[in-house]
Image 1: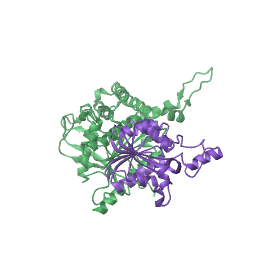
Image 2: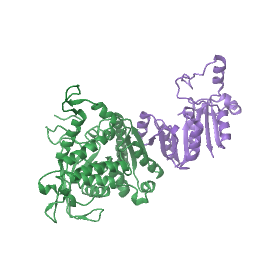
Image 3: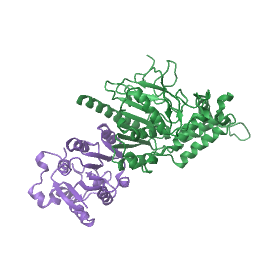
Image 4: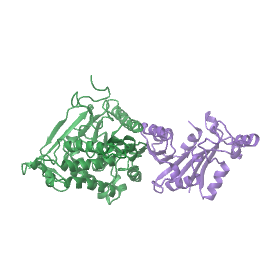
Length: 202
Length: 387
């Protein structure tokens, strides 16, 4: 299981109403249903992923989150999730606003563009970083809004978003130990962390 | 064997007679009811695998299979009902009936009114979608089906499926609503009204008492069908299928010949076939039931409070090129279901064929439908195991 998902699971209450934006094939929702007995709903645009969710018996709505969540009422979910998708939306600030309107709490995970490897890549090679974590070329990538941990926290301040928990991880996948932040990671997460997990509310 | 391996093969229609008076929502009683139906697949031991098919405007009980080896066409939803198909008859016991008010054998305007000894004709009680649900409930009781694994319907059939979820929440586990709406738009009512006007202005209509004159309002009913048919297809698919192709005549200068476009000939053909096989009073009755349907009317016009009564899971599907029951109408259903905190999945299928897409083979539609139904049958298995 991806490390960001291991972390965020502990922040979700049993029986919670959970909305997962960009839910993929529903693996996370399925886990949460089985482990925490949540009542979950996914939003997805990829046809195969949607069929995958339906095959698992999950509820999923075909909808583009770039167009907002106007069909959802205020505070209608306990937790709204956005995992590894913030960087792929057209207006991350708008999506965040919508998440915080619909959900009492939100969990957002994203790749940290401020990681030292990305910084070095750009500084030394003068090219947009391409790595295992960000495998796309600049002209053909779903990731149109990369940000750093600092950028995200600045946006939270600007929008009066309260951070309940945060973890900046060393790797998205790998051994179980890897997801636990090291001391240097805690001191300078924006330099050493590859992936950020934020638990926020208004 | 003549039939494909994934066909239900030969089927026969059955009739069940209910002798007790049936109170219709308009307040009148039908003295008794005949319901014609077909079943495919077999009912499991705890009667938990039954699926009800609700037909649309011009449908009937013959949803799948063939009546004899020489039948050219199978039932109207044969694309989706059969062994290994979306509604898998190896897993489910499928029940398909002709709704009352219909003209394929169930009690309707062509039946004899015992009070007069004449066909009911225009005196047949006005029906609402809820009357169909009620008569389907009678059939469910007769077949000893306490709870449907799924109630499934497209268009007008979807309205019946939704009504089931509110009228008998404990008797529906899944509700599949395809290319349907919470209520018709003014444009939709206008199309239906124009169709009815075409029928009633046919001199052979005789105020609906054409049976007594030994005629049928063929021209009016054909025009009604032509109007309907245009709205069930999309501009795109008509352009692709017919374009401006001529069936006869020519535009060559210096000639004057009778011209007929392919699309004209096609529509006339469709109208002719339909008018010989369908009853005009039934067409009027069915389109009125469509017009009158409003899921939330009895719930303060609030679809969210209406859907709070449901206890089943929902699958809602729409088709991109459907302008008669557009994706927007399905999205209204979905939004209300989300508001009522019901379990709902929604897909908008990219299909060029207009409203008729729900009857036709469309790959993604088939995939989603199959995945949903399969998951229902897996649930059946685990429930059985648990008990």
